[in-house]
Length: 248
Image (tube, rainbow, N blue to C red; front, side, top):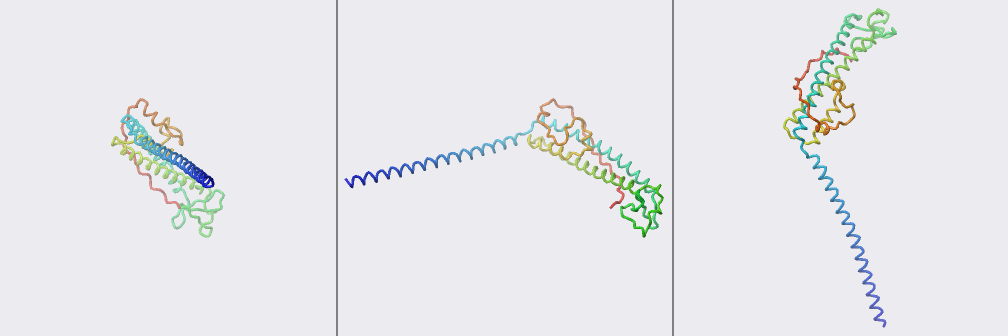
């Protein structure tokens, strides 16, 4: 009887051990299955994203984008012309002030502040009283505030011109990029978003019905719309800006 009891006890322990082993196997199988599903999910997402990016833009989409680039060309030319007119005007005003300014013995042209307490030369350097007392300058002559304001406008216009020319180069590069006739829809969207982001306000103001800065245009909607007749590609306008007046 004792041996029989030990036999059943041993058999019970064996069955319990086998049950535990099967339970562990079942839990591990569930975990492995879940991991495989997650890996497959990630692979499908990656393939889907890759497939979306690899969709080649149609010729109609490329043509519509070319029309958009042509409008950027035209607006850039207008912005450069307007910028040149403003540069000419501000340089005329600066030269007129320099012609009327007080001239020191060393040839520097200087300007007194409106409150009559300081003197600055045409390069922005302060002239001390030991060199020239403010009272020696006729208050009817152009003031430092007026002159420095014009210099500030000149610098802003020169910076604006640089931005416009940089944008023009980027538009030219975009023309070349789509000239081959094979570009993905994703790259086409990214290209236009990049151009919109770097477009100077001076150019943007010459493009009617352009989305406000900061919004993302629905390029695909535009490409699905009837295509406009492309305008002739305007020649680059890179009129040289007047040489800046030295100013520190």
